[in-house]
Amino acid sequence: MLADIDSDELAEWIAYEQVTGPLGPTRGDVLHGIRAAVTANTVAARGRKATPRDLIPVWDQAPPSPEDMFDTVRTMTALLGGTDHTTGGNGDDTQ
Image 1 (cartoon, rainbow, N blue to C red):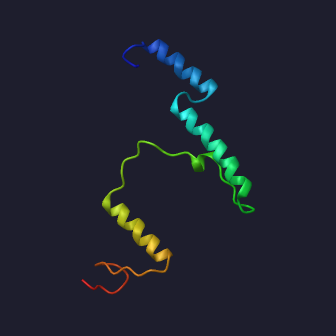
Image 2 (cartoon, one colour):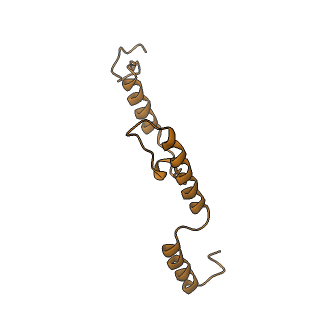
Image 3 (tube, one colour):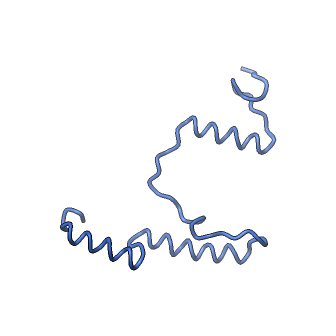
């Protein structure tokens, strides 16, 4: 698309989107996020309300590094009362 339009037209589309809201797939994500939040909030516990942003996926993120994934697993293990038996963990090193 960008190869077929000039900078003036692109500026007009950017301005249009700022006035009317997101165009394309992003608009669909927002609309489905709103619908999902309304549905979730009808059955949510008192005081726990979801927002559309909570339910909209974030696309095109860089994958987490192996270290980040291990940190997440260690945190979840600790929160669930588990023991880390890896080298350098908080439990007995069995290796």
